[in-house]
Image 1 (cartoon, rainbow, N blue to C red):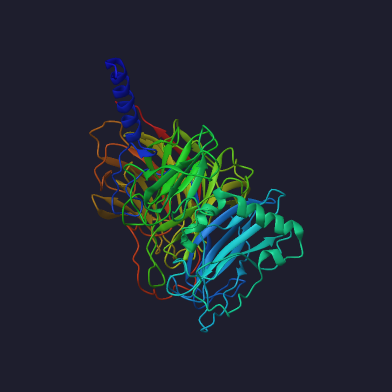
Image 2 (image 1 turned 45 degrees about the vertical axis):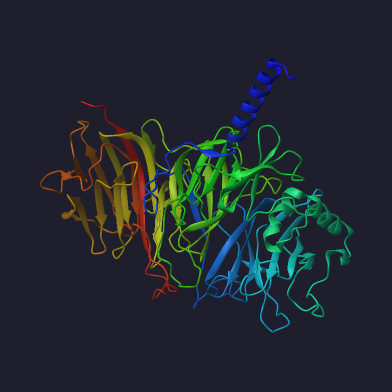
Amino acid sequence: MIRPVFLSLLAIATASFAQEATVPLVRFAGDRSVTPTADGGLRPVVGVHNIQVYRANRTAPTHADGLTDTYLHAPMLAYWQGQYWLEYLSGPRSEHEAPCQTSLTTSVDGLTWSAPRIVFPSFPGPDGHYALAHQRMGFYVAPDGRLLVLGFFGTEPSPNNGTGYGRVVREVFADGSFGPIFFIRPNAHRAAPAEFPLPYPLYTAASDAGFIAACEALLADKLMTAQWWEEEQLDDTHFYRFRGKAGSIVTRPDGSHLSIWKNRVVGVSHDRGESWEQKSFAEDFPNNGSKYWLQHTSDDAYAVVLNPTNRNRYPLALMRSADSTTFTDLFAVHGELPDQRFGGYLKNMGPQYVRGIAEGNGTPPDAAHAFPLVYSVNKEDIWFARVPTPISATVEGPVQDDFSATALDHLPAAWNIYSPVWAPVRVARDPADATNAVLSLRDEDPYDYARAVRVFPATHGVKISFRVRAEQLGGRLEIELLDATGLRPVRIALEEDGRIWACHEAQWMDAGTYTPGQWHAFELEIPANPDADRCAVLIDGTSPLPRPAYFTDPITTVERLSFRTGMYRERGYGGRDRPGADTRAPLAEFLIDDVIITPLAQE
């Protein structure tokens, strides 16, 4: 007979287990509201630098590899021997269109990138059709310190359906040269006829025993090879312990490993990938078909980087967590969406397919203060981002920036920077005073712009001053104040004809002229009275307007000052070829200096 006490204990244990089983492995506990705009109406992570690595060009390429490809996607990143190593797919026009190959570029600082080289060229198959490069994992730093670069080759129309040729590998040497290409794992179910010889030998045929050992160390690492399953689609439980797409894995506080895969699938492993438990869906995460990236940050916190809607692949956003279980907040990491310059099949719009440096694949020298990300934009350009830690979307205290603390040709730490290849942002010398440093926004891109944003404490009343110098006529600079959601109550524009305009209740008012090659001082003041809905404008000490400019957008506070070398865009257009996309526009440069922002106490 079972005693009542025992029954009570059993009931308690069962209830406890049931309660434990319902606790999600990963969940989002914040506000997931996102607007259908480029930045999603989200606050940006303060101090993110978005740097374009590679700008696609179809008809007039200036790239050393000579490629005219306009499908560029799926970047991967490592840090080794004092450099970032970045590989990405390069195809003619559309996704899954042959010949598609893998290119590689390097950078010491994330700002300036080497001319890319083809690291895995496409090859013809038995039917004459070229192979399709594909990749879910790019690099592996072996136990002996060697760097292996990897890719995968499949066939049209789907390189990741389990019937491709297999995974390739080669060594990267410290001088940047490459070893020969080998197959590290041919596909078991490849569709090519058995008599068709693979174009590269198996890694075991290498003459370098150290290279063979590095490959075998990788093959034995279940955390690394877990990312391979999608392209092989095997039910081989000996080699694969998790069936998922595009996984990202981090170490949790208790030493276990947390993974997140496409479609918000999550799991945990307590034995370095030999087995996986608690496979489930991340609770209240968007179920987006693009990739998620898990990052263990330097302040011993966690972040997941993602596209925060179920469908759109913009903006690129970030959630943060103290314990890797409960994520809160939703901030923008890349909130720009330029026009797609080249149409193509399956070319989704937006910053997407984000990756960082997988654990074990290197530590940049500034890892205590930031982490890097790579991603494609519109599946035609490759971008790099530096995200500061601790992660924050707010700042404290007044702002006094004269850029003297930043090295020339670098970027100011507290500013959010958007810097395309043809519209770079950098700290430069003042043409009028060689001892003075200024922020330079240059623009030669017919379909994009340079942008610099300074976040300041959210306030209604504020006094802002800065200097602007246009180096020419013919360019455009827009200056705006923004609230937390991106509304723009205050707008000023230096237009191409040399005139300055200020926006008053959505109408542009003439505010005088500017002189190229001359500094002009601007002062903006919003009264501290919370009922005030206007901004006083002074240019070179005088008011160019008959009255203060009344807000165009109704707001309660402002918290960002923005400088942009082009007109505002809610989001770009895609799906068509844009005329003149391969030709630089006439150069326009604007210099910014002496930015002072002082919140005003409420009256």
